[in-house]
Amino acid sequence: MSREIIDTHLIRILHTLMEEGSVSRTADLLGQTQPAISVALRRLRTITGDPLLVRSGNRMVPTVRGLALIGPASQVLRGVDDILRPAEGFDPGVADQTFRIASPDYLDVFFVPAIVDRLRRQAPNARIEFTHLLAGGGYERGLESGFVDLVIGNWHTPPAHLHLQPLCDDELVCLMRDAHPIAPGALDTAAFAAADHLTVTTHGGAGPGTIDMALRSAGLRRNVVATLPYFCAAPYVLVKSDLIFTTTRSFARHYAEFLSLRVEPLPAAAPALRYYQLWHERTHRAPASKWLRDLVAQATSDQLGMTAHVRKSAIR
Image (cartoon, rainbow, N blue to C red; front, side, top):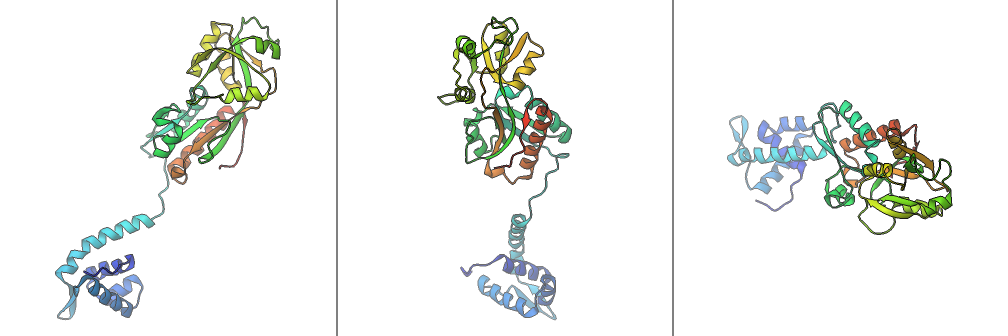
């Protein structure tokens, strides 16, 4: 067989010729002239080293070699058609797949229930898994490898190589027990600096976290005497101690509703924390990924619209 490069159009002509056994019918089916198909047949004969179609009485019939090429030609054409076919849309009503979202546990009390509720209503056959930001080698690697589909969190400087959509802003406040020695409304900068503080560390690297950076920009320093790995444990520590926990208003308000805790304003103006959803270029155009991002954005808007400032920013 010749080493000449054969294009997909020539393979389509070969396949049609072998199935139809006619130059004229092949020309009609492919919208070409009979001379053009005859030229293509001569080229195919040169490439394969076989006549492919031979006359039998008043008609043409494929040779044994020609018949043997129908299967491989069909396979190639199916592959080409799959490549050229537009991506299928995503129908959540019949979707049967698992979505995985990485997020810190402080989002559990407001983001997670709203997202699960929407997903269950829109995609009843789908499954959703929430995992820690450090699972799977860290959220950046998880997005790159496909271990996670989406990441939700807040960062002072989000990674520039990932796609990003701001979801909302939430202000910082202080959470403490009702019987705390600092009286309601008396938390000033001096009292803040003199108090003992509780913090949560979920990031894997060294250096200040997002809240520490916000406090520093406000000129506030805190004496941290207890550090936890999980946000949702913090309110229960506060109930049993005189510690102060700096967190977002949404988180603080949730726990103050059913525990003996109160919310105090931060004694100095600090920038709000901004929540983002991040995703990788590999899933940027995938219909299922687009649907998931829209679902998260809408769930966030519905859930935090009354307690945080929902940000209508462009996607990066």
